[in-house]
Length: 182
Image 1 (cartoon, rainbow, N blue to C red):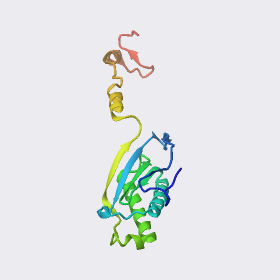
Image 2: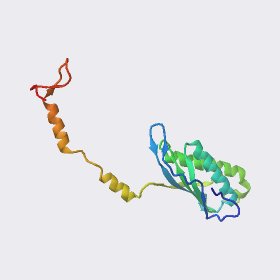
Image 3: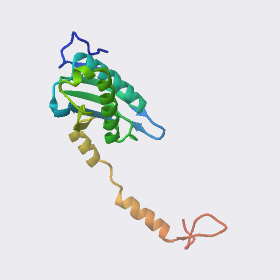
Image 4: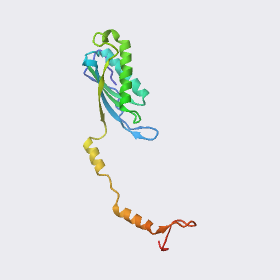
């Protein structure tokens, strides 16, 4: 794992984890990866190396609290990119709200003297964001897989319907046929 430090370029992508594995929930198995992009208010160049380091920590902590994981993180002076593994029960809009809200609050507390020169009021992030679901196979392969799913055999259903058409329920015995056959 690499972190952001003052010796690295702001444009470098910081690797958080290489474990893109299937995860399990109580009633599901999932691999739900989301790419998020947050932009500072007015696209001002506010973020420094120290702020990016702190953001990585805050985002990782927040994702863990939401049963997720921060897999990758990178940023420049006016925006950040996150690759997260999110639990399917978590709505993306809630995830974004928690990540942006907590990070904005903590950055304004810890770096206010630097931030107040470029931003004012209680705003840090732009209200908009970019979200892209990703992971697994390319879309074309998934589409082909879905299209090629086995369809039920019509003959099988017709045969099954005909077998049951001539049957009635006898209270003393399992299913029997009216004609006494089969």
